[in-house]
Length: 352
Picture 1 (tube, rainbow, N blue to C red):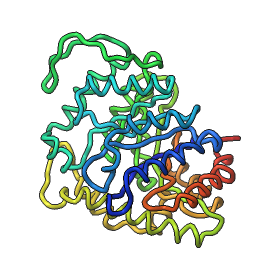
Picture 2: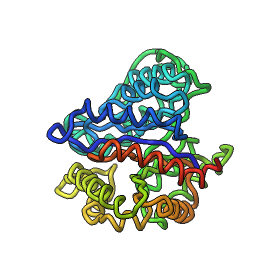
Picture 3: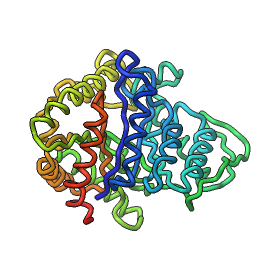
């Protein structure tokens, strides 16, 4: 198993400036090579406290590429629905060039109604737009010149520059939440899957769908599965809870509020049962999230048990992408947590 760090801001200007948040994030990136964290990842969202400080993963990861010589740079994920595929492919090629071939290109459909509304994109076009964009971006990342005449984009033969360093292209990841077809499609196409941890039985079923589709398509190996976790590691369980609980619960409140319109009348054929996700977020508790393994908050021994139990319950995953300074966590606390996790937890799973 590999461990990387991710940044998902859930803040607004009344709490902390964007400059402070991202400079604190870069200070965490500075520790990656020393502590053995193998990737840096961030998201694309807009307009609200839920990720709104992160409108451009490529911009942040370009800065991060200058602060680590080893860590991979993961767009986790960019949203093709809101960008022209030619522009997005060119920007990803630039990031791979700047990092000398360390890009891991993650994509998602987007799911927040407000973002679609503000960009003037119909929710019911989400799936088709994503599929059409991916059909454009993948060959461009492979250095091909292509022409396209689709429902949403049309252009004559064009090459996206600069070309990526990695051949035949950078690794591709697809973000998925709960839809079995998303896991199946990612496996069939030979892409990695970026998932949000759910209960072991549910995630195990989705993981098996993904791995079967991967094998049935004839891809070598067993696929790649990345899961995202909040993490705060402390010498004492009391401190872990004191520091971690308020920030974790604020994350769930912010997430639920950003997606609230799914429960107040917003409907789309491309987003079945998203009202249930909001209901689940509203019911989230600190103890429940720790118990089901989706939040790694505790002492090194407590967290190691969580990782072991969750990994077994879901049938195994390959990369953990952990939020190390979520909410308004004190920067010194975040760094101490990273160091303790690296020293006491990671060696139990990395073999180092």
